[in-house]
Amino acid sequence: MKQIELKAYAKINLSIDVLRRRSDGYHDVCIIMQLVNLFDEIKVGFKKGKKAIEISLSTDMEDLPVDSSNLAYRAAELIINKYYQDKGGIIDIHIAKKIPPAAGLAGGSTDGAAVLHALNILLDLRLSLDELKELGMKLGADVPFCVMGQAAISKKFSKDRTSTCALAEGIGEILTPIKPLESWVVLSKPPVNISTKDIYQSLNVSEIKERPDTLSLIDGLKEENFKKITNSMFNVLEEVSESKYPEIQKTKEIMKGVIGDYKVMMTGSGPTVFAISRDYRTAEIIFNEIREYNKDTFLVTTLI
Image (cartoon, rainbow, N blue to C red; front, side):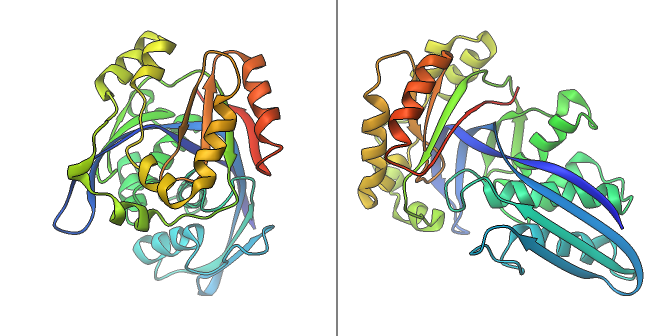
């Protein structure tokens, strides 16, 4: 059996702006996403056979689904149905989880993206980055960025088309690579799980009072101006999530209690809160403070 091992990296949102609710029920967004060095380990194997393709998925996390409700499994199904329907064999996927599920860190999305990349190689499909991102969009709004970020790390696609940081527009499928943030990151997930769909449905776009300064944030990243970056960051979903889950506000308060030059914000629809700091010592102090409160707490770096 041929096998590929990949690291599927988590993402944080340096900003989230929701512009409008669309007639199809989705929302037009303006989001800046950044990969961080927290990852699941994905092993994908393939062996040719005469019988119809069989997918086997296993994980080291007891509660994680191993059927089509898992995006890694669905990514394999998508590839098979579109490009390998008349051939036989076995696809074996194993996920060693480090990214907490339902955390706003795109854990499922990045696993799905890794499987798309792996099968593109194992099945010798030679799909372009655009084709992989288009497949990813069928799995979820965060998957195209995870596909792009994985491509940037693998360095097997054109450098000017990839990045570990990007502006995402539309419903997340329109990606513009931008200069990544270089920073220490403390991630802390309160012990609650949040439905992204529920948070978006609870958001009243007309009542949003504060928004991120996206253009200033992009300029700050290009200029490597940390103060400009942190002053421009904002997540319009934060107020909605905090109102439903007070653990988010408590986590933020603990992380903000440390003296230093850093920024604290919620990622995605939550519940994970993160702090970015260019000073390792400050990040380490924040990490030590918050890990006493939340078990799922990590000190990592951004990927550049």
